Image (tube, rainbow, N blue to C red):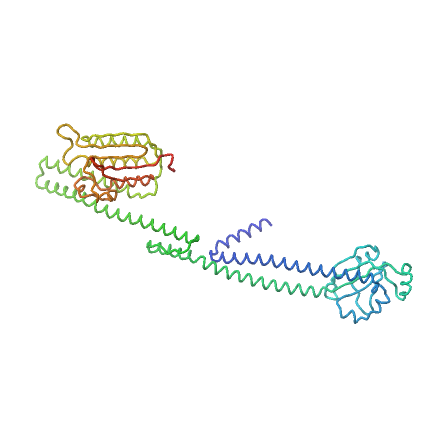
Length: 498
């Protein structure tokens, strides 16, 4: 039995999984209503049946007791004188059984079923009565039979029984039987009605479930169609949403995903387009210099100093190209959050970056004040971001064509402060034009003043990218009496989630 139940459950689960959600909702509604109708129908049928039997038993017993007390039917002279036609008009059978088992009844009339139960009542003459249901093969129906103790008067002794009852009345039982045909017919009709209304209820529930499933799953079907349309055409146009139910929320989440995907694709397209434009310049310069070198070698070669200058130019272009490719690789990652985060002491990272940039810009004065501040993050990405900030400050703090003033004074000044997770880098350059301030962190954006300086226009974009990935922010402003100031804020390690 356990194996059969397991196989049945497995088959049911496999069948359900093969059905569509629409069919499952319809089937669930039909099964739920079917079970409810079945339970109510069974309860109603059992209640009605029990009540009808209870009423019949009460009526039969009461009539039998009253007849036995009045001695109308227990006087055999009167009982045997009842015409058969009188009992034929009724579905009741009446009879008397004596303590010796002898049975008496109206002439030419069928006696009620009498057996051991009725004989026991006749012999004991107690206060209890017997009540049972008997099925008669010849009659083709069931009878409810009740037997009550009674004293019966033999035939022809009516006057003697009235004068001396204690001497002539004999122990017995009055037996009354009533056919259950009308009750069985009523219960049969009730069962047909319950089955009919139950079937109608199940069909109605299936239709209602089908309508509810069709209406409720229509947004889901539209969402499925939109997803298939996106997969087929790569058209990331959002679908219209109405309502506030769970499917509407799913559609809004789907639209948000489409929006994020569209933005990511647009960023990638812009990155590829801008990268192609930016890579064209150094590649063209390198190719031109190499062509010049090849043509000069065919004509006998260049002077050593000209050749060295040309090679230095090629080397500078290759360095710029290498930096650009590294920046593009960093920005092309487009990861939503930092992976492989580790605990970093930000002050140590800034100090290492200052030492690195200071070696590249020896003509600058550096004013550095750092306080410890731990953060969770990617040390490589944060280190590159801080280095880019310092390189940008060093580049704009040195006047064009001057590394150090003639009086041994520094050519520029850079101030670096790290207090409570806020890193500020202030240069001594000319500052940022107000029109350029909103665009300094955009990819490949270069102001008119910066176009003559080396760089790819991606350094500050990488700083913003790193700040956002670590849950921080970056902004720029001009400081009166100084130059541009960049402020990078990062959250404390205790408040970050890994």
